[in-house]
Length: 172
Image (tube, rainbow, N blue to C red; front, side, top):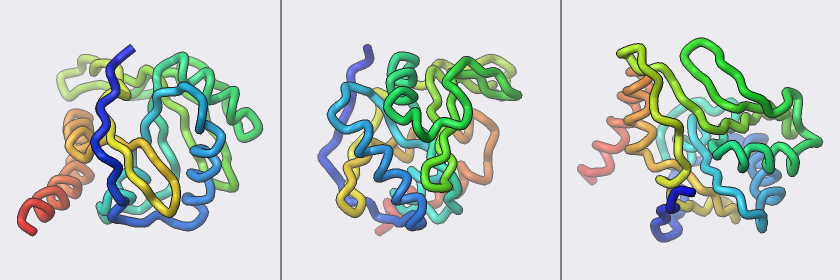
């Protein structure tokens, strides 16, 4: 198993909609105390860290064993069972949940197609930090990692938004 990298607990600098908070709270409460390595990625992660993005769903990255355990702990919310899936530029073990009307995804061993056509390395949960948001302790992917991944996927608009936010933070 990969070594987990944590920095000191930081306060979230952004916000997410109340419905997403309620769903994220349910997730963190259900997973707390279980030995599962997971990390929040995507728009919810970006918004919590202060990037100005629209937030719709909650994306959780883990390994296959963690995904199986998460699906078990969150089984009352599952709308698509945890199984291997390959769609377009992505492949992973994957499950969809509906938590208080918010779509959440458990994604394990995720890979995506690089611009070269090759598959990326499998996502690892080792590179994360902890933030505190309204009483929740949430493991999140560092913005640099999100920026790198969006660039590698060819999602330049989102990558540029992250870069501008990070550059602004350097200037202040």
